[in-house]
Length: 258
Ligand SMILES: O=C(O)CCC(=O)C(=O)O
Ligand SMILES: [Fe+2]
Image (cartoon, rainbow, N blue to C red; front, side):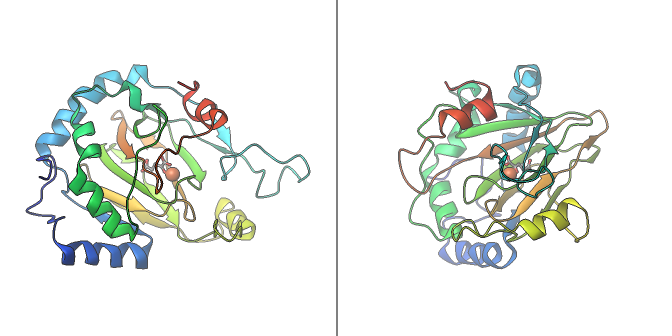
């Protein structure tokens, strides 16, 4: 049974043909937006439980390279591998999401997972083995942003809860690197950081399901403008069971390892 938080009339995720069309869109564009995927009731309930907890969010150290790794002292500081960008958003980790949150119903729903697999063209997906990574609630208040980066995981699944009055735009450039082959895309990283190359803007409203191939697409979220905080949920999965983020990555992203 599909969770009632998903509008399965508008988005028949059980339908093989529907899932195949989603896969085609994700494959060709590198990103997929499904407006109205989550019901207004679900979004209202999740905003209601999340928004008052903004002051519990953790804010990581604010500069990083686009690869989300330590810098390499053997390379110049202006080498694309070492160039620093700013991220100032905060987050609640999975262990801060309450046991009865609708976010867990959605995350754990087997029909939802089967649909994501069909759209991604993979056999099955698994939660992270650590207690922090699987469900994250991101907060970007006025002036806060997420700098250009590539994700560690091969795909990303997000749900916007609350849109800011302005700003908070998701910008991306598809297939800048090819992580599997080790091609790091230095030249294009430089042209994007130097704003010498056009970027795509992915537009979506609260309730949309967004999927993108964030490991090879360079992407960022522009600073929030106005008094309304941008709030977004990231559902994180792996394509193998038992995978946890390393302790150093947990420390970087959450400021703690458990
Ligand atoms: O906030 C967003 O829309 C994207 C989030 C993201 O790229 C990430 O969490 O890695
Ligand atoms: Fe990302």
